[in-house]
Length: 244
Image: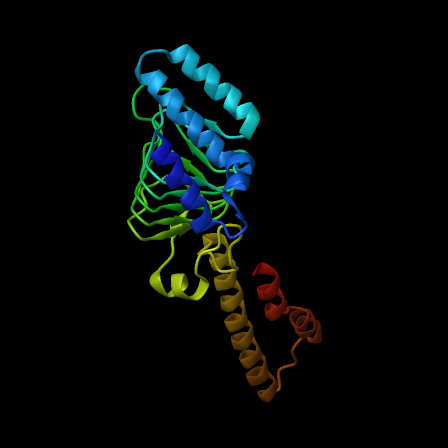
């Protein structure tokens, strides 16, 4: 156990530039406290001391703000940054070198017994506020953006963002990178894409209408000035900006 704690402390220094010394990490990092207690409660859970395991995990939740069910399986060098509001369900499985930020839920979507919670591969990073729900698999070294809601498998090395979460393509990953606390403007949001598409289409329609009006005027047909005045009030650039 002491070797595992030493690894956990080292992982804090590797992933948190705010960590200054070992005493500070041991006394002031709730993620480390929650993980240490979970090692004990997990052993009690599998030794069939289930009430005691749940009671100790309940006390740990009050101390750290992090709820880890004793039945959850967690690998080595697991790091919870800040930690407040993290919930990890009973059948969740977490690999080695995983990083989770505050407000993350590894939750279930069914009341049935059996595997109900997600599995995270080695090296996964889960941004603040993300919800990963159901018995799904997050592949190795995948990244889950802040506040994403993930209900489907995520391939290894992929970046998933949005509600519901979608996989970013390679060009977007290179342009945006990954931010555990916030996301860029372009998050492959289908509603935003639909609105931009409608705005683009309306511009094309306006151009065609203007062309038709010009041809009618050349033919001596009087066009309604009011129609043009109404059209002039439409500003697609402004609408595009506020949608972004």
